[in-house]
Every structure is written in structure tokens, then in C-alpha cells.
Length: 169
Image (cartoon, rainbow, N blue to C red; front, side):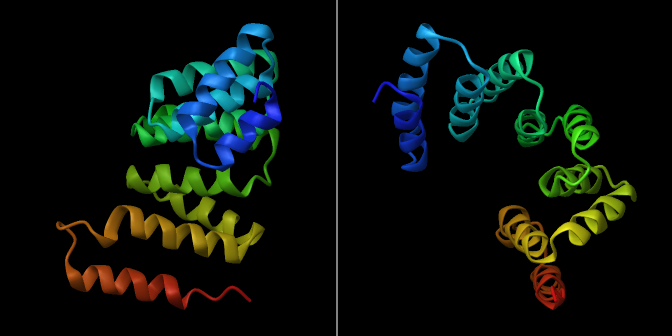
């Protein structure tokens, strides 16, 4: 599988190490923004944040897109580099203000910073797509709160109920 579609198939099959090797071979032959983006995605999935950031920088040097900025922001968010993640998500939003995911991730960054602007961006995300935003909130709850021993059972139940009560129609 020495072509882009083969690398994408490996990524879809969650065979990230194999995909990384295929992408390394492809990048030796030619450098394109798409190949660097895919390399960044693989590195992000493998939690190799330095390589992911470097790959997204290469992709952005070749082509500036909201997607590449958003993915760079996600890598920074996963490292809890909140201010820098906000810069990347904000750049994605300057290019496409209707980017649901960037609006959601800005809200998450501000929430971690205990900044009231979180509500503004969460409302924007809801205005763009209520169902997907509710699903992302549910996933966020599962990742950060449900199994956290420092969060009380009562608070966990309250958060889960609040998310479940959000109307999407």
C-alpha cells in the first residue's frame, strides 16, 4: 500500500503504526499538505504530540486550512497548552467561523481556564449543530469526569442529567 488511499485505509482500520510507515515512504517520494496532515493525524492518534505538531506545521506551510489549524489545536489541547491551542482554534475560526468543532474546542479551552467566554463558544456550537454538540459534550463528560475519583458521585450524576436534558430539536 504505497499510495495515499492505502495509508487512509490503514488509518481507518486503526493500524496507525503501519500507516505511519506508509506515510513516511510516501513523504520521501513527494511532500504534499495532505500527506503531512495524515502524518500528523497518525502521530496524534499515537499520542506523539511533538511529531504531530511538526507534521501539522509542515501541512500548514504548504496550505493553510481551518482543518490543519484545528488539528494542531487539538494536539496542543491534549498537551494542555491551552493558550496556544486557543491561538490555533481561533485561526481556524478566522478562516471558517462556522466550524463546529473549532467553536466547541474553544469553549473547552476556556472552560479549563475558568473563563466565562466558554459559554459564548458553546452557544455558537449549539447554534451550528445541537445534536453533534450534545454528543461531543457527552463524550467530553465520559473522558474527563465519569471515572475521575476526585469528582463526587452526586456531581457526576448531575452533569450526566444536565447533558441528557439538553434539547436538540
